[in-house]
Image (cartoon, rainbow, N blue to C red; front, side):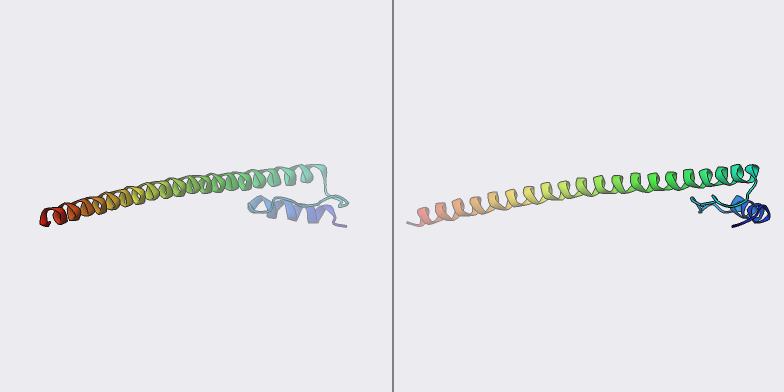
Amino acid sequence: MLDESVGQVFEEAIKENYSLIDFDYQDNHFSVNCIRNIQTYLRRNKQASDAAKMTEFTERKYMREEEAQTKQMNLEQQADQLKQKIEEDELDLILEETMRKMSL
């Protein structure tokens, strides 16, 4: 069980700490004011953590959408190239057939 002096030290430490988002301070002898301040710092840290996670989520979502658009664009380009190749091959066949008929 931690006493009020440890609570004050912890409160001062968490004031400068922005990564701790949870701390079980129950069953300790911290003052009410100390507990409120610790809760305030923990909420601050949790909000910052949640904001960072949301930013990361948004960036990943944007990247997935961008990848999907790029993939779709590449597929369309490949389809156009294939279509052009087929048309060229058909024209070559027609030309060959025409040349063969003319030589007969």
